[in-house]
Image (cartoon, rainbow, N blue to C red; front, side):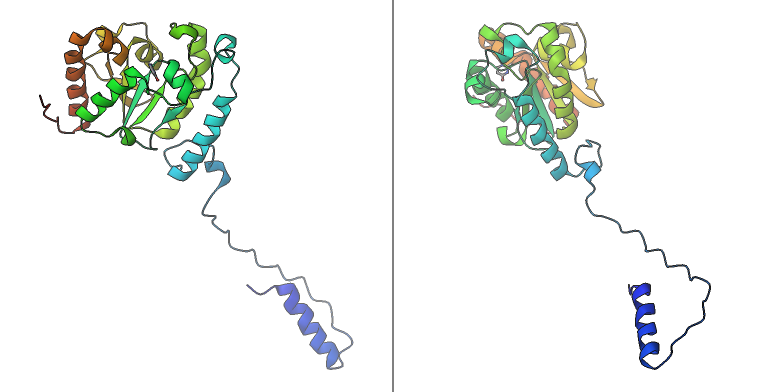
Length: 248
Ligand code: URA
């Protein structure tokens, strides 16, 4: 759009060049108000984990959160003994998110959840259920390894809750599978044991949650694997996915 001030100056200049020395005063002409311009990216979406936030913005916000978590010093016992924090792994908007309790020694060393023996069993559960590990999101309710793999203290769970909530808000999985009692109780803010939580659909901030035994428990109690498989079939049914036929 042409600048009206510039147009007036050009007109005055050409009048002056033509020998006109005086122009009578006229009432001021209101300047046109420019049309509002719509920006394609708004800064406010960067930290706004609403459904409308684009995946790219949520990914950036998740990286910022990961960095914030890596510097966390809220739990003296955990912060002083950890090698590193273990944030989570997997794609944004994953159809399914597995949530464990807290990193163990292998996860603390590698910085990725479920990479030790329990993780190998979880990988088998994921594949048996018709997914690849790379297509699900995996995290823990706690981001640091409790020393000696002790059960996290209630205050430690509370300290990590905000991180976990923001993480899930940003990833926006369609379904959650809680692995073990501590994870399920943290997620669902309940004291009910895992045995009673199994076999039902719960909800975490609007996301359907199915609970099953922790893979580490399954390693100690192999007969419970069949119960875990029942839970996975139940979850797949909820998700509207086919149940793969198990071989051998
Ligand atoms: N157990 C968990 O709960 N999470 C891990 O990441 C590893 C073992």
